[in-house]
Length: 193
Image 1: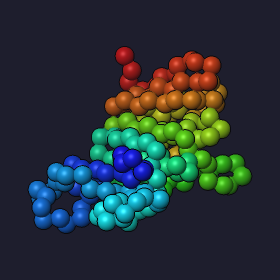
Image 2: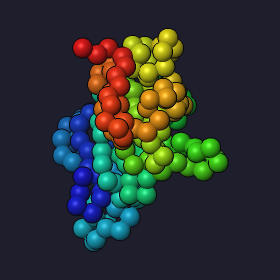
Image 3: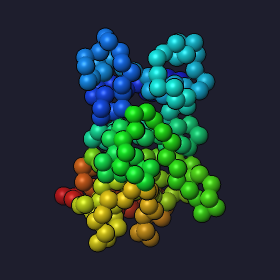
């Protein structure tokens, strides 16, 4: 994460969506950082950086097993990479080569502001500005917190546990999810222990 909010990634091109055809890199791998999100307000150095063309200012970044999520300054959520379990949040299983904005709607139909997100191995969570927790992706081990529903959740789905209506933090593991509420209670789901 650059000082002005640009985001740089490196690693497997097929896993983190980096395929900029740079001959200086090892085939299949980006061994040096590549700018995937350029700052919308950056200086001249960042304008010269080769990037995916996405312009935004990133506040935080999280990595899953083979995908990435970034929270932007305006409360947006960008995801890209593998999507075999629907972990990117677009309602399908198609991978994305470059960052794209996830849409979580409020009751009024407007895009929800997302101040925090987390990545597990193959599932994702976001806390919207109202404190409601949304989860999506792999659900085969109960990591979605949906009781007996162990299916993958392709579009983001609100966590229906009444105790988690005011989440302030969420952390995801390989096959588990843990949420912290504003009254400092912890709730866990999936394979924990």
